Length: 227
Ligand code: SAH
Image (cartoon, rainbow, N blue to C red):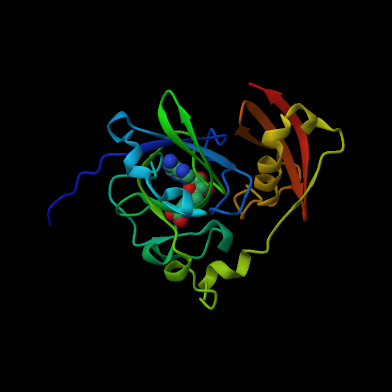
């Protein structure tokens, strides 16, 4: 079959500067903002006409840091412990024949800047600098199915850690960046097959290295360093 070439329409900027620590699905960190900056060719105000009437958008994007030669018919979702394999088409894994991601985000506002109209969205699970291939409005009448079955993915949606910061280290994080960080930490960034309470993890968030350990249902912040 013919190959298809796609050109990104925009790039999204987020506080997630590396893959580790990004929430595993859109909406898991409702406060996690992203700023969508259109490529010069697409800085056309008419292309956004009517978008302000939609509270949520679908983002279709390039899993830019997950490009691989070839593909595997099965993947190991981290939430299944990292040992159980499911079909790639039964998963939301970044490692797929075409590395295309799909996220549902809230449209917070539209800002006019020297780079044209930018969309400020929240509930992001995207790496900073991710190329956006397309944007479509979320249609509650068509896209929402409250009775839908969520397969194996339903089993772990309630998994949350409580975040402890006994030394008050998180006071170094600017107020406006803190809620999303707390949500991302509570979502448990660890690979789910790792349960070593001594192990120190570090995620790069905003301009900070945030280090933590996790034991049982509690994640404890151990260091916060500006980078
Ligand atoms: N909501 C999307 C993404 C789910 S996978 C979908 O269902 O298609 C979520 C993971 O994608 C995150 O944990 C993050 O590690 C990864 N991710 C986000 N942006 C990425 C990028 N640009 N390249 C590679 N992986 C990315």
